[in-house]
Each structure stands twice: as structure tokens, then as C-alpha cells.
Image (cartoon, rainbow, N blue to C red; front, side, top):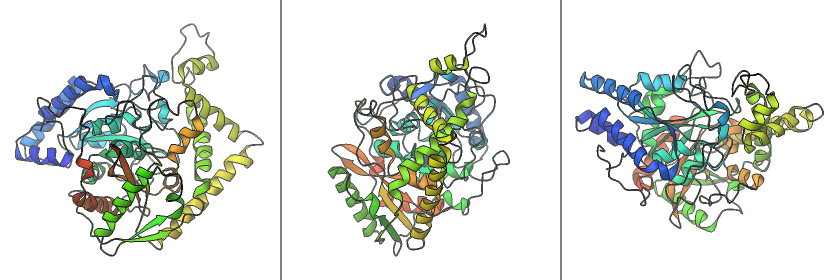
Amino acid sequence: MALGTAMEARRRLDAGTASAVGLARSSLERIGAWDGRLGAILSTDPGRTLACAEAADRRLAAGERTPVLGLPVVLKDNLHWKGTPTTCGSRMLEAYRAPYDATVVARLLAAGAVPVAKANMDEFAMGSSGEHSAFGPTRNPWDEGRVPGGSSSGAVVAVAARYAPLALGSDTGGSVRLPAGFCNVTALRPTYGVLSRYGLTSLASSLDQVGPIGVSAEDVGAILQVMAGRDPLDSTSRALPRLESLFPLRPADLRGKRIGLPAEYWGTGLEPGVRTTLETALGGLRELGAELVPTTLPHTGWALDAYYLVCTSEASSNLARYDGLRYGPRDPDGAATVATVRRNALGSEPKRRILLGTFCLSRGSYEAFYLKALKVRTLIARDFEAAFRQVDLLATPVSPSVAFPLGARVSDPLLMYLSDVFTVTSALAGYPALTVPAGFSEGLPVGLQLMAPPLGDTFLLEAAHGYQQAFPHHLKTPTQLPQETPHGL
């Protein structure tokens, strides 16, 4: 059968009924058989993958155990894994090979995880649909004519299509949460700083976070535990309380817990089928004993504007290094100008955001745009602080709609940016947020977003685990993809 949840694989490995090499081969074979249709994977290195798996089997045979020992994992192609391509979905870095391991990758390797592939993504993580990769779009495994969401499109699809039970993406304004909602998997944007950003190619440094992806909250807790914590190579990193509680993850008792429903997220704009599905999911939380409480985040209406001003401004600075001199294709004769290199090697979306960000930071525009966006960001963070004095969690939609058709929004950037309307606020505030599969509308997945106070990541996952034990929507897989693989679980 296809690779299932990480915890199912963990139990089989511990019992000796599966091997790390067998799981790795299943993963590679499934990628080879089906990724021509989905476009989720940019590169594999079978020799290196199987060497990691063999080392994991030796550790298992010696009696060693970690939450991820022997488990396949897919890495978004903006995370450095030494010696492998790290293209960020761009022709600009097509020839680049990572000279070192990202901290999160190094910690996974130390814990015995088995990287199997680098995943497709919107170019430099700029996109909400998975259509902006220079190497072609990623397709949604639930309907190949629809987008999977972005920018962590390939990493999420790899889990949804059961190439691997675990993946790492990155989340700037919703880049793991939106595709998770479109593809029926679980994905976390942790509290800012909980996961080191060292070795994650920067888009917007004050917003970027590594985002763990799994079939279930239990899976996400396992991979988070081995990666979280302070890193001397990242001055913004911080410790996560109750780290030991992430594995094994216990379901939270939701009786008496107050879950806030911000009015700004539940008004007009939701597709009727999405609203119905989410109301059913909220009813499930109520059945588990939670109290649903109306609340408000009054500055939400300004969040999308503030986010794109901050994000593009930081991106224009971070992407300045891609000039054909420091990074990017070089002209051996030295005749190409920086402008020529960037014109030829960057796609339309990075160009658009660089131009907008450069304008926002220019003389006469800094105070009018960027500085005001920072002030709005502070107001949004204060909204969250006030809300969490009254409730334990917040519950919102992930997206106003189910996954939309490929090509439907490519020519309308403003409509595309609206896909992030429910996910950017927690990113601006630096708060943890989790996408939980909530059911289906017309056969397509719908995600529920749960948000917690800063450093409340463990309780957030425990609450989601309790919900998923009662309502296992996350276990449903795309029926159009076959389940059998030769070395599966």
C-alpha cells in the first residue's frame, strides 16, 4: 500500500515489520510512477537516500529510537541539503548546489530521518497557487486540473499523494497552511523563532518560518520535536516549552476550552460549501466540549495590504544578491549586465514583487507605505494579544474557497493575493497557526485554521490531535491515485 501516516510507519519500524530501506524505496518508486502527473518533485538522489536509509536500519537494529528514525521526508527546494540542488523553483539558481545543511535538515539527519526528494515550489516562495515555478506547475492530487496552493506546493502534494509521510515547507504568509487546506493534510506555521531559519533561503526574513507537514497533527508533533530549539546560527531562534510533550503527542481535553471565532473571518466571501463544511467542523469541536466564543480582530481588514508591503519590501532587499555576480548564471565573457541576468533568469512574480518592494522603500514612499505597514503590523499583534486574553484558541477558515482551477488567477495578481486573506495575520503577529483537514466541499478538501498564543504550539497540536481522533478527515486520500507500491507499509 502507499505510505501512510508517519506514526503508522514508526510502529512498523519498531515492530520490525518494515525497514527504512523498504520505506525509502517505496517513496522513490511512487515518485517515479506518479510525479509525471503531479509535478511535485524537482530532484531526487537515490544513492544518498538509500545510504541514509541503510544507516537508519543499522541504528534501529542497535535498539536506537527517535521520533523520525527511518522515516522518509521531502524537503522544499529552498532548504539546504548539502550537495543537492537548491533551486528555489528558479532558473536563477538552476546550477546551485547547497554547500551546507540547513539547521532543521541537520537535526533531521541527526535523528535518522531519510530525505527522499527536493520539492517543487513557487519561485523564491512567491505565490499562492504552485503555478509560479520556473520548472512547471504542481497539480492538486484531488483534481489535477486545480492548483494545490503555494508556495510549498510540492512538499504538501508529496504528503497528500503519500510519496512520504512527512515534509518540510516554508511559510511566509500561509505557504504551508493554504496548500494543506487545498490538499487535505496537516501543516503548522510555528511561533516565529521556534524553528531555525539558518539554511532557509530568505524571502522576507521577519515573516519566514520553516513549516512541518504531515498527514496528522501527531506526525507534525514528531518532526517538530527533533527540529525545535535555539540555534546559535540564528539569532531569532528560541526554545519551545513542553517540547517533550510533542512525542508521543497526547490529545488535548477540549472540555471547557474557549475557542474564539473572529467576526472578520466568518462574514461574507466564503463559498457556501466551504462555510457549511467549516460549520460542521466547528460543531465537532463543540461536541468535544469546547465553547465557541464570538470575538474580534478589528484590524484584520488592513492585514493583506500590510503583509504585501512588508513582504515585498524585505524581498527586494533579500533578492538583491541574485545578480549574476554573487548568485545566478554568469556570463563567461562578463558582458551581461545585472539587469540582463535578472530579466532572463527571474519569472514575472519575483520581478513584480521586487519592483513593488523597491518602490515602497524608496525616498518619499518609505513613510507613506512601509512605515505605515509596520504600524498596522503592531496593531494586528495587539488584536491577537487582546483576543487571547479571552480565549484559548482561535478558529478561522484557511481559504475562502476550495482549490481553484489552474490558470484561473494567474493573470490577476490581486485576485491571487486574496487567497492569503485568512493566513497573513498570524504571520504578521508571529503567532503559531495550524491547518487541520475539516472535510470536503464538492469532493475537494476544506481546511480549518487553528491559532494559539505565542509558544502555544504544543497545545495547538494536542487540540488538533484530539479533533482528528474524533473526526479523521485527514486519513482520506485522493482516489485517482493508486494505493499500491511494491515496498509500502
